[in-house]
Image (cartoon, rainbow, N blue to C red; front, side, top):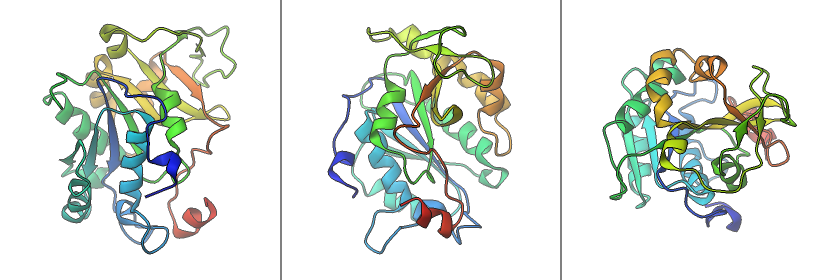
Length: 244
């Protein structure tokens, strides 16, 4: 897989938080589904890399949403032999919103590893080539207090944050969490969505906007990660090459 820093957890496990990888797109500009792309022959596919990063960053298991090339992607994912499962999105051609709806809807009905209900999901895209476990771990850290006056990185939607808090969240606090990574102040992925918000996200996730509309309408935490990655996705082979 990737380097050693991607092979082990950076911060311990975030109990009751499951990673959700949106990997259903056809990748037309990439020349095929991005989930199956490899930077070099012998490298892991982008979907394998995303799963590895979420595990290393602390997610307690991973769910992957598949659509285009579903059988091939599913075979790769299930061969990993970890706490990884697959959700099929028949409406994947509608865009990211359909994938997010499919993943959240499936997770409302499931449990994993005897831990009971999943209380929050960390959502990421399959095409973030410079995402690192450190970014994942930072977004999974203890939620801080929403405070528009004191955040060093104000949310463009005017919901800023104070991240200084040391104790772990209770289950109700985790379920109420709404936060996302930002890169030089620009919101991006991954995004942490507590279970209390799933119904609202499912109702508003349309087209390629994912949870964007929901975030704009609700106070949330913005976690600056620009010192760790760019947060840019790769839509073409040239963009993937330039991200090395």
